[in-house]
Image 1 (spheres, rainbow, N blue to C red):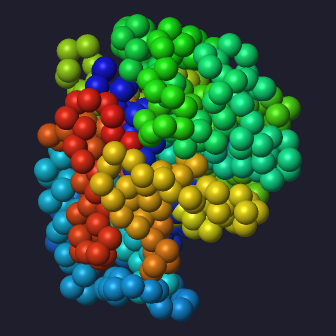
Image 2: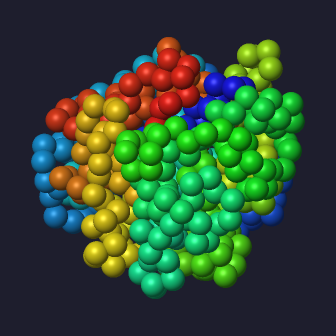
Amino acid sequence: MRRAVATALAAAALPTALACGGPADTVRSPEDTRGARSAPATPLARTAEPGATAGSPSASPAEASPSGSPGGGNFPALSGDVVGKLDRAVQDTLKKTGAPGVVVGLWAPGKGSYVRAFGVADRKSKARMSPDLYLRIGSETKTFTVTALLTLVDRKKVGLDDPVSRYVDGVPGGDGITLRQLAEMRSGLYNYTDDPNFQKALEGDPKREFVPAELLAYAFQHSSQFSPGSRFQYSNTNTILLGLVIEKAGGMPLRDYLRRNVLDPAKLKHTVFPEGPAFPTPHARGYTNQTKDGKEADATDWNPSWAWAAGAMISDQQDLRAWSRILADGTLLSKETQAQRTAFLPTSYPGIGYGLGLFDNHGWIGHNGSLPGYQSATVYLPDAKATMVVLLNTDTAVGGNEPSSLFAEAMTKIVTPDHVYAFPPTNGTGTSPSSS
């Protein structure tokens, strides 16, 4: 589990991020079932793609082309030959990664859309993967947390250059670490998910309930890694602190602030900050090899409280598609604040910059996420006004590569060869910007 913990929260910092609206052929369960405990996902009535059999990956038909002005760049029409290439690329990647199932979506005004679900949502029941299922989104949570912080900036409740010590006591060097540096991943604070004692505690009881103070205690046992602002280093500790700042300045629990000031204004009806292991239905079951013996386990009911503001949230393709555009356009923020958010600074990853809780991956703006059992990537390409969402029910790496990155890379090689989404292998170091 150590690789999963370190990578899952580490990756939450750079890889995928955005979305908007779901496929027309799916059925939505009642909106707010956040109190429901996890259960096997219910298979939905689906239209099999020609040639699909009960034992092969099934795909939902691509959506009809949406109306709108043609997208920019060289984004091709999502029909005919391009759809066939995407189908083959996604199926080949599914085979390569060994993932149980995957939901993928591409949308571009005037170019059409491509929505597919391959594989299974539940290995035991063989329920098929479907575009309308809920999944855990890991570090994509950071985009919501930082957006919440920025709404407080716009309301003059906090300043990006305020020291974190103004809001949270006991932060080592807190007088010299700003909220901006926390959001940029440039604080120098140790990443608590890298701490061996934390990893041992989570490995021993993945259903344990953690509170933010416990998580910070693991981090604060270690000295700072570098002077604040001097370089980039993904650390989940940063976002846990921002969650506490939001609670202090916003005057309410983080979950409530997010709902009232981010999720409701964005009209995201299927995005949840869960309490404990609660999981809305229908959802895909998640599988991981981050276990004591390295064997695959069902992580669906594991408690994501250890990720809290850095990676605990749940969503679906429909909401993530909407969120990607909102995030990239700064719909909920002032123009000035959005401009600061998207002032991407260099990272150690070629072609990748990081702003305030947001990355630019070779032109694709958004974030990715990873949590034991699940991975995601949600991104938006301004040049073509295109959105891409990838959701998986596994986080098991392949040759050090995050499976979500492999799917996103395979798809963008076809539709945007000048903007190929790509992250380098982590090689087990846990330093990928996609882990939560």
